[in-house]
Length: 51
Image 1 (spheres, rainbow, N blue to C red):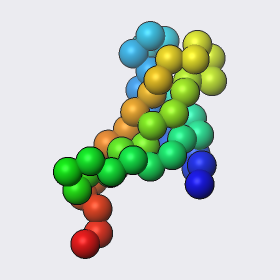
Image 2: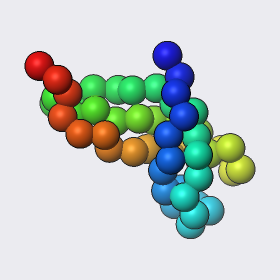
Image 3: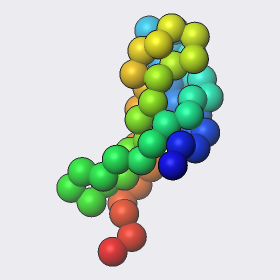
């Protein structure tokens, strides 16, 4: 399920809205997607997963 998130693009050096999917690693949730301007991978850490 793709949702819209706001994250920092390192290449553009600006905050961008991106549509991404949630990945879980070590009980941490992270939204991962592509920057709509340059195509670089943008990530945003969301917090601990509900157990």
